[in-house]
Image (tube, rainbow, N blue to C red):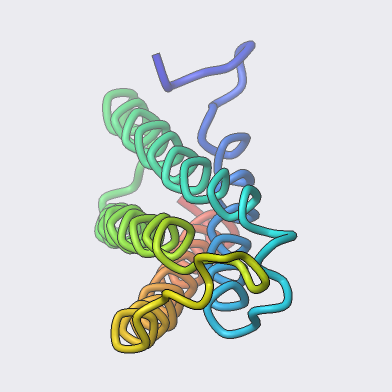
Length: 162
């Protein structure tokens, strides 16, 4: 199901959504947490990214798993490159987990940190708000780190040959 799209391997097509949405989720969640002025304007965007980024990371992972299984089945992978592809696959799993964590924190931010100027903004609990801000920073950094590492390992695997 996730192997091909119109005869082209789906993984190189789908991964671009994760490459765009995961960093956007990370950057916007940190912005939402630390820059109150942008909250009213970006609340819905952050909520949508919190759903779309993990979905794109999941589709990328599933299409990558199908692509690797196809390459293995057709004996198109040299045995010396297989560990590199498996390391890329492991990084893809970590990217998915980090993105899910960042998305959960982003949804908590949208739900619990009210936009500036709203009546609920005065009732925010400072300890909860600062905890969420710290979590937003940590999960955003993890998601960015893993999406960059995963992309780098995949690009090196392609350009240095299979």
